[in-house]
Amino acid sequence: VQLQASGGGLVQPGGSLRLSCAVSGVALDAYAIGWFRQVPGKEREAVACTSSRDTSPRYSDSVKGRFTISRDYVADAVHLQMNSLNPDDSGIYYCATSCTGRPYDYWGQGTQVTVSS
Image (cartoon, rainbow, N blue to C red; front, side, top):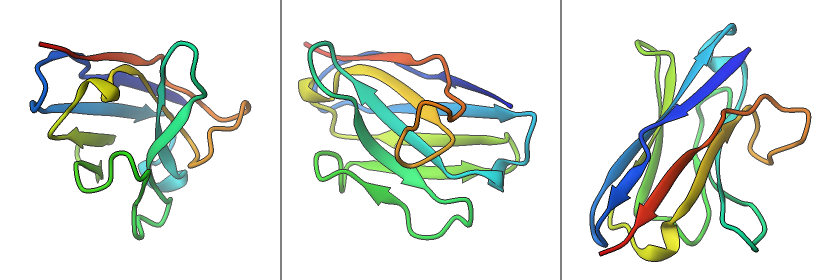
């Protein structure tokens, strides 16, 4: 099983980015897929998650209403659409095969998001 995160970059406040987590080696709906944000000096934050049954997605309070997680069965990927970005959204974003981010989950390599003017 391999996860590959992509789509990060530099964006101005108020802008948008779409992150993608490409999943290979297993069916896309075999696992829950979560997106996590890591900022130096802070605990890793779970920002969004979609269950293996693709039921109601979950979001952290800090991103609710701005971020949308979705499964793409054509591309075998889970996307994170991020709108109305602000500097607090900066960090390295990782995807993993759970909603809680356990050490033994499969993890993508991370993609850097920087929100700055």
